[in-house]
Image 1 (cartoon, rainbow, N blue to C red):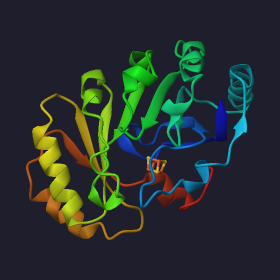
Image 2 (image 1 turned 30 degrees about the horizontal axis):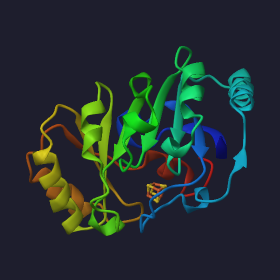
Image 3 (image 1 turned 180 degrees about the horizontal axis):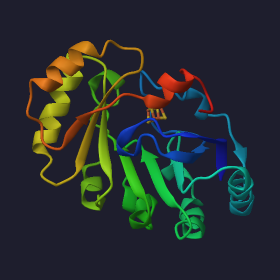
Length: 214
Ligand code: SF4
């Protein structure tokens, strides 16, 4: 697998915010979101075998107490050994997979049911709108969620429209782009009755700042 970085931190996004996790960030992404905050993952990576990754996880485990792993990117579904890695880990850890929502999860990860999923839904300001693969809605289970990152009013209105059209029970997260003014978004959010939707910020960036490896 091509790995960009492995680090221990606090999950700052989505419904598992606040959980201690070991993050495994893979290299490369098929999208190029305008506001991407992990561009360094596009082509900075090194090869690691599954065995080496397992050893690294055990190394962190010796000194830290965690039950969660977060496999993120980049786009982790593009790593062909991902299934093999998850097969080795799912009995011992809870695994959260963060994906852009653009690739068919079942096709790229037949073991998709063994992980919790944070699935992005890209909105117009990202320049990647219409990339969402609607087949992914069929693969959601309890504990998964769909995340909308919002930069402006058009993004917000588009997210509302998409949420209303998604006819399944799941959790939705609305999250402002980092460093944007969130007051207007909170006001808009309070004015709508949107099903199963929470407004959340990026907690880890409030704790550590907007930097790499946290
Ligand atoms: S999907 Fe994620 S990693 Fe890929 S470009 Fe968008 S924000 Fe960056």
